[in-house]
Image (cartoon, rainbow, N blue to C red; front, side, top):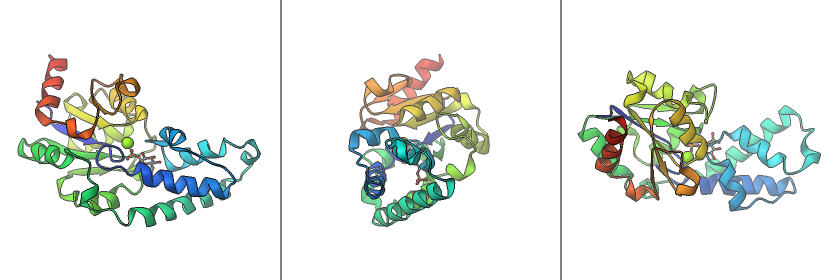
Length: 222
Ligand code: G16
Ligand code: MG
């Protein structure tokens, strides 16, 4: 039986991707650039600075920008993002997530968060889910972001659980890669086309059924 579930935040627990998108879009516009939802797919799961770099790469004339200027732009994006997530409430929890958290508690499976966001704790608090979490790993606790396994191994190390007894839930390709390289069982949430490297894929969070996940995990561990 698994000992811990490690949840990604954006795209698994709530859909903050839309707010990241709106904030980046506003910043891009100020730089004379335009981004769309398709482009935003690449920004899922990667850090704030890496996201900014991808946007700046759209215009070669911006390549000479100083680090100070980049910091200023990243901060500006975050300030706008914070005004957008200020309205977050429990109704923004994705379908099936709270039931899954309750099942974990019931079955004495530990719960951690493994997010690339520096705002992870604030978001989980606004959603009213903080009590469920035994530990939160956010961007401030790791040196290497996803796809490096550090986000997930840091959570397991804190919980004192072997990696092979952990299940990582992710919506991003980089996130699934991080879970896999931590030697954990990976559950991908989204299209099979994107996430076929995951050990188990469901289309959306409403299909994250505790018993089904356990069954798949046990089948693979046999
Ligand atoms: C999230 C989002 C990313 C975002 C990153 C950093 O990761 O998916 O798009 O760039 O956090 O967020 P912040 O600017 O708040 O530090 P995750 O790992 O929760 O999916
Ligand atoms: Mg995500």
